[in-house]
Length: 231
Image 1 (cartoon, helix red, strand yellow):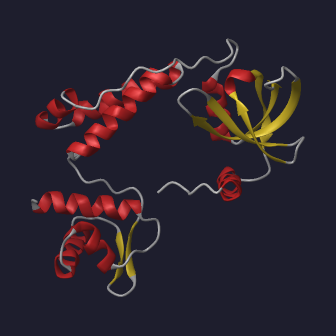
Image 2 (cartoon, helix red, strand yellow):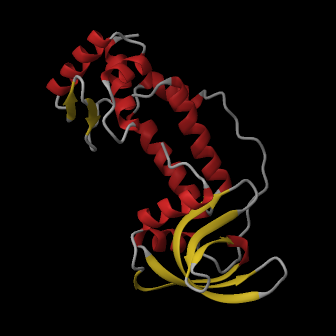
């Protein structure tokens, strides 16, 4: 492994950790000696990387640092290609277009040899059922309400055909192979609820934000459902 690749790997490992991580754990993840790790940290700090910490206390990389030029390993490229193809094929039109545009931007700044690897990626997306939402439903509007932490009025039909009107706090959209699900806090039930988007008859973002922060609510939902937070 080249020294440049080793430094890039160290930055990537640090990005995965949200709390200080010991030098020995970092060295073990990278497969290098602790002395090599300490030298690499000093090198990155000298290049402007905002790595805080010291031996015995652990290290953390503050957000926002980028190592030019943009580089990816072969497996990272395959993951990006497969993920963008899945979104482009299975998501709603606005998100599908965003996936294609994002991949085009990444390819535009990759070195030539990595660009060829994108084109030759060996992972193929198999055929799947196209997800269909209600014609009047705009998933882009739901995503916008989630980002803005806006309350929303919805009309919903359950599996038995019964309809109800709810005021909800939209928290996340969950994508499955056969269905999309809106995760929300329901004011009527005073609890978290899951709403299939193909059964949403109406979604209207309301004025004003809901009273709690979305991240705190998502944590409470994950705790209740036993879902581990993103790495």
